[in-house]
Length: 191
Image 1 (cartoon, rainbow, N blue to C red):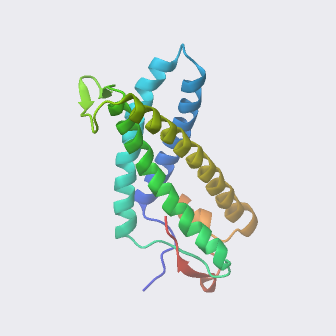
Image 2: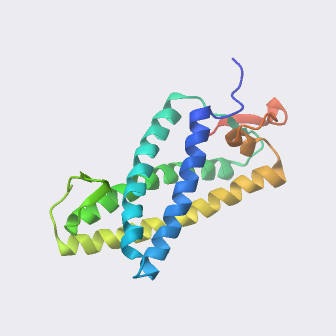
């Protein structure tokens, strides 16, 4: 069986689309908390984008579980392999948890979750100011964790692309350059 060199096209497309959406959401969240004049319009953008990220994360997870991934280079240390695997698990958890917590938070606050036009999501919990405050704090902390993990993920990707030049970055870009030496790959990626 031939080794997988790239993630499949759907995985790559979802990866880059979600990367753009997540970076946009992080900026929207920061601006939203700092600007009262733009808060309402940014919230109207933040809610449907958050739900879209959650739905795309489910599709991405299903695709990830149903397709083989390229192997990591075999010369990576055990801690680097563990860090790669755990960071991807954390990313998936956060991509699913943040929209879910945001939806629950808005439900607890008694706020409608408007997607577009007259399309609204139902409330998932009863309105409660205390629950709203707790979920709001949790949503903020999860966003900080997501930001940290995204920065670490970006640094690792650039390390593979510019320093190691081992094909790990190319596996997600779809570049035609194959991984250097088939003996350098052994451990399955966990994206």
